[in-house]
Image 1 (tube, rainbow, N blue to C red):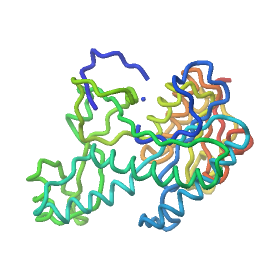
Image 2 (cartoon, helix red, strand yellow):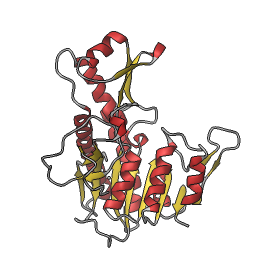
Image 3 (cartoon, rainbow, N blue to C red):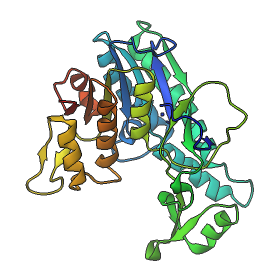
Image 4 (cartoon, one colour):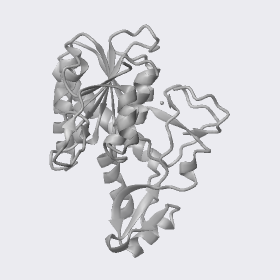
Length: 313
């Protein structure tokens, strides 16, 4: 969703499954935790994303979320949807000469519904009626003047030969020649401004873009008054010197120190970088702490016993 810059930038994503989340999300919501599930939480270990793979993976995620629920806190889980949207994009490409491709914002909405449906089922089985569970399809507000719309750079989907890419270009999509690997679609990736779950406003319109799930999670956590933000990924902590013989994990770290490491180029822009930025933004906005850790350690992360724990001081 986009609207002009003149609208106030009230706080942030993809979809959210809500466990025992009271209406309002005001500042008095002590003990509320937001868990952001990465793509690894919704696919098989080898990256397969078939229906049974996703059901199994989200069942595993539900068990880890239930461990956090068992501590007595209120939990909201938000998620990415890269593999799921990727599947829809392939269907778009294969059927483009038969039916019009589904726009990217529709892809996001469809995957939110599917993931929310599967995650709700998994959480209800795991919690066995001890807590109510609900799924919420959300819209993310972005600025229509965001520079990302003028020069799309976010690559999505698979590589195609020139003749197949041409069909998609004729449907209004932007594709770039990537040399020997073929052509690949690029889209805007604007900053998330606000999560919209109120009735649609007439001045809003859907736009084709990719919203970073971690930055959106940080904004959503602020919106619902969460005290802690957990960014689940496939490693137990952020690392300095990642990929080198001198790599070392970061434990408890002040936000200003983490900012210095980020400015020095320690975290890849398409991988750990957005998680570090999201953690910093959340803490700088008044959050108690943000944790970057693996899905298997999220309960320990909430308790401050695992992962990279980011604090103000």
